Image 1 (tube, helix red, strand yellow):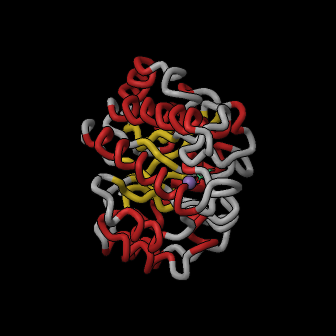
Image 2 (cartoon, protein in one colour):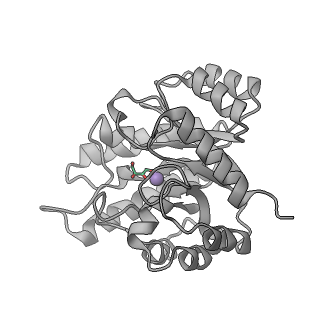
Length: 273
Ligand code: LER
Ligand code: MN
């Protein structure tokens, strides 16, 4: 298991669950100084990222890129894979595809979270799931061409009505032709939705691709009331070797949230004696 911390480059995401903000260089420097293995970057778009500068910073600080989010497509441009307008669905697909390629060039996966959208109005649940499946069938192989998975994230009920729980998402992914989708299991969402977080992780097994490491109040692990040991025991049992990434509110401030995260990571996920 490897540690990661989020850096948002999206001003419109202010107030959202990201540790470091706006300054890629400062975020990388602080992440490395605290001993994180990787950073997870939330960019405004693929085009807005200076890939050479990102590569330079990662190399300089001996950091990996854990993953890249695509949520700015929704937050900034109001694009969703399940929008009733086919032109918007197409743009949503292209927006994600750009980030799949960019992240893939760093050997990292892209995340489909809020870009999945929701079913509502004229769009039935069946129709929305069909569109979601069609997009995953294209984006999964696209990520595979880079040798990485595509991460799909179930969200809590206030953010999507497609998939809120890991067992339901697994059942949806199972019959797809692409087997290159892995689940992003966000402990904040799971605390709201899962009957038993550890059991859901065990059920997902090798389909767990990435963890968002957040306490019940979406603050750093240790600042809420999540019971962490059974969750880490389940991750060890399924031999999870991916990133445990802090997608959390910068409370009381970015530095304190990052320090609390790395301390909790070492306490709960560090090498066993
Ligand atoms: C994205 O990873 C996520 O968890 C959503 O709640 C958007 O903030
Ligand atoms: Mn998340």
